[in-house]
View 1 (tube, rainbow, N blue to C red):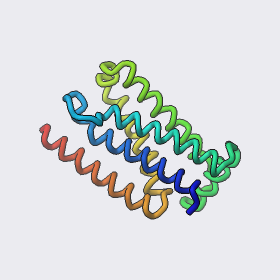
View 2: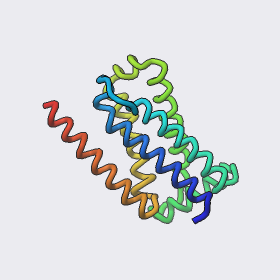
View 3: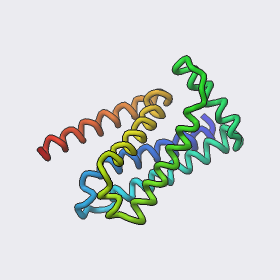
Length: 166
């Protein structure tokens, strides 16, 4: 595996770790806790995701949207049988959603924490869908295993938290 491949994979792993870590700490975000906070992990995950985005476009696609679109369509056809590059646009939207949510949380913490449940659910549902696809559906075997474990563990933990709250 080349250095470029390592850079792409490690930045993706760091972003996913920040995402999962933030969600795991999210339930206790109103209670004072030791660093790292959910917001810190959310922000670090976003920074790592930007690094992943830059590495992928630099090393894999030569800063070409056309090449990235073709690569996405090819990979989608290999996994699903349908050749479409729509996943690239979904990734662009994912980047903007995470950035907007992170900026909102930093600039208006109370507003972010008191947002309607449907909005938070929509944002997190979309992000979880994208991460699941990136790790379990389109990931390399190690990414598929780690993604599956992370999603199962996070789902179990959230279920237990809900049971405890009653």
